[in-house]
Length: 352
View 1 (cartoon, rainbow, N blue to C red):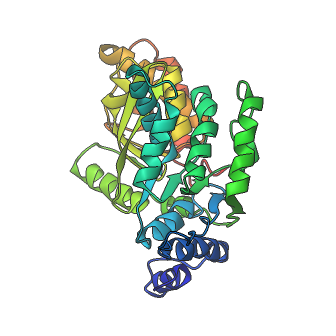
View 2 (cartoon, rainbow, N blue to C red):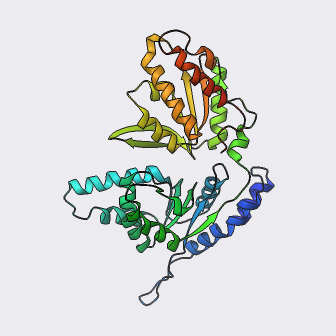
């Protein structure tokens, strides 16, 4: 059977990957898990199957190749496995718990965890981060049951385990979960000096105007370059509202202007969005004026949230930033937004 280092070497040889010592250093950890899970369970009444291997918590800066390596690993498996964005997984868990409680189940987490462990031997999470107290309050018991049922967990994250839910409300209740992760998963820092996501955008145009067929074609090209043609839906829950990002993959989201600014959304929604994505592609930004003043105000708030969070912005628009909003109340205030849109186009912006 082909090993992960061999698969990686083949990709480097055919030019689809660039060799990276930091990436190569983590391949034995992935291979350790793959090899252990590929062994069939022992048969017989008195033959006990070996304990599941420890999983992997792979952390490091954005764009270092964590998700790419995990995808390579999952594709090599021949066991029931699921790869899912951590935020999307937790939203599924909340929905399942709510349904179980409506059905009168006293301990709702127990059947929900059992349903997960019955369906997979390995869970691969992209971008584990915990900012919501409702997530923080249930992950401990949820993962305790998953680990007890032998589910192996592999996850990527932008932060070390000890920084999960940092400064969160009632964090002391959450701390045992961090200890559990360390017990059941090997923690590995992917310390590559190269941000491949920024490299893909280095020197590239990221603001396209006019908003025509050429702009759409360029947006399509950038989207495919950043996601390798893969996408899924991500739903953000903010104060009992749902914000759906129907096109999302590996920290990159693609939306239309009116999906975000034509709805009754506010600062909390845009802050949640900025926390969930590292690159946002916004298409079809129109000219703004007193006729669409509310949309313009939301756009200003959105840009502020993206700017403060260091989110990389790619956009197609009807005009250059300085000419987007030239008449009506708020034109003076929009000058700052135009300036930020210019700054966010600079090569290397958002690397920190």
